[in-house]
Image (cartoon, rainbow, N blue to C red; front, side, top):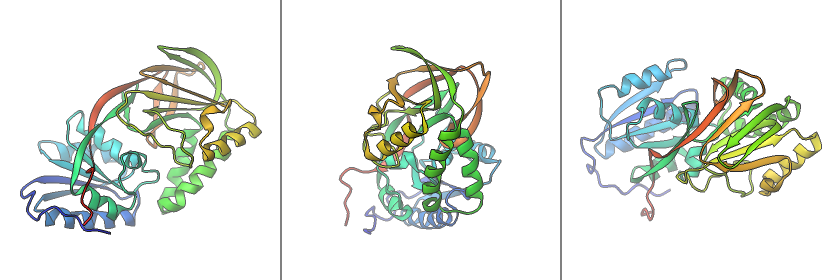
Length: 317
């Protein structure tokens, strides 16, 4: 691995905040924070650190950001921790740098940030700012995706497994297989999908709404080639048979899933989703469960969130 090339003292006096989620990545997150503090201090930056405690995340972040101006916020955690920082910033344009220590690290992947924490630190010490879109469902923000249906059950299972101390490399494959098992047993939802271009009623096992569109490259982790295109992706797994769902799973791996009849795939700038006669449903936003009233109203705010990403053409020696 090549060392960073920023001159010592180039950022002297600049104040930054390092946020760590002890439950997201455990030892890996703590080791990344130690290394990050060292590298930032070598550049002459003034480093404040915030170790989040479960149940007090929002309170701690708002207190840390109250009355203090930071040049950047470095987040050692996963998608849920990054989203919590975005919420606490409440529209302030402070760049966020992600040191991936979570389960999926979806935002980091799509921004081209190395998934190895040490490599991510090296890449982000000399970074550039990119503004990405922010999704909202009934006002609740999300950077990656919202899932309705069996996703809430999957989130509860994930929290139990994470509490046992499983690393992300162990947890992620188990999460995929658990999801395939749950979706075959989960009762269908009666959805009413309304966008500017279409009105449709369907029975579905799950609905996923993404902030920008997923491409059709093969692999277990979906990719979004752009995070600033201003389009929501709507993906509904129809009430199909077990065989059809297994076929869809295979096509997910092969990258041909968008042509499968078991899936509704469309895009929209905004959408309204009704869920049967339910007055409220559990929704998983960037891996975190919330309960929201129906109908679910999805919107997208263009280029709202400032992110630090590896600089194009960054020297490697």
